[in-house]
Image 1 (cartoon, one colour):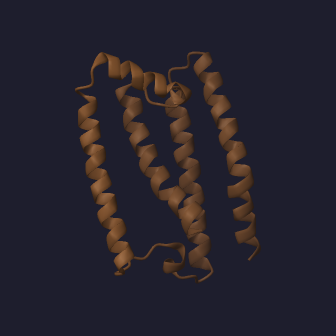
Image 2 (cartoon, one colour):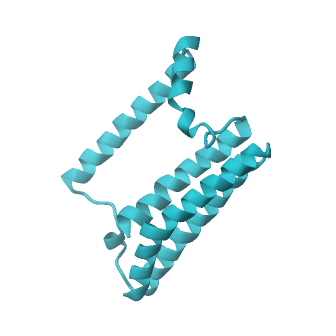
Length: 151
């Protein structure tokens, strides 16, 4: 289907270019000390990803394709069970890791900040940004899996 090829071309070629352009816009806004720079970038990214995901779902449904073909079906296979257990164990690990961050020493905190310098501009710096960033994380998790893995 021509629309499928156009969407695949967009995802593979144009989405990375738009991502780079968005990064530069964020960098420029931060250099101008705009307080809303991160919130704007997070919001624009969420709107774009949900628009693409909804577009794929509309395309899929309108062409009478199966949800299973897009990866939107629950499986009763052993591999699904293994993946589910792995995700649960990994989630527990992440929660434990997040708790340990609260007891981090100043030295280990400084070390972590050094490791994150390359993406520091993108990370939230306030409680408000952190809330929107969490929503962005869920958006990316769902939409990108649907678009890049499912589609």
